[in-house]
Image 1: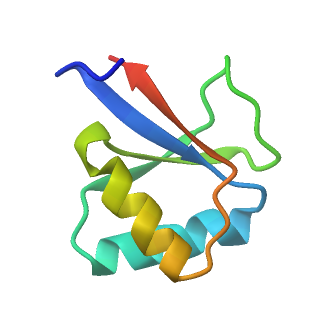
Image 2: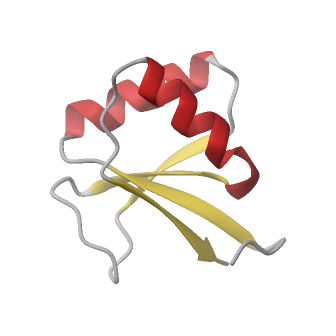
Length: 78
């Protein structure tokens, strides 16, 4: 469900992957934030990348083109 009070969280297998994704997305001028993985989600890496849900398709495309492996992207409500 994508409401106006929602955001997306990208999960990664490694810390290096999330840090690389952060660097790439900041360079592309996305508004992102590194956060602890929400408790109800599970990840090999304890850090998640939060961004606007409306940017999900573009974020996926950019990270795929940069060969950054994303474990999953979840949409969460505020």
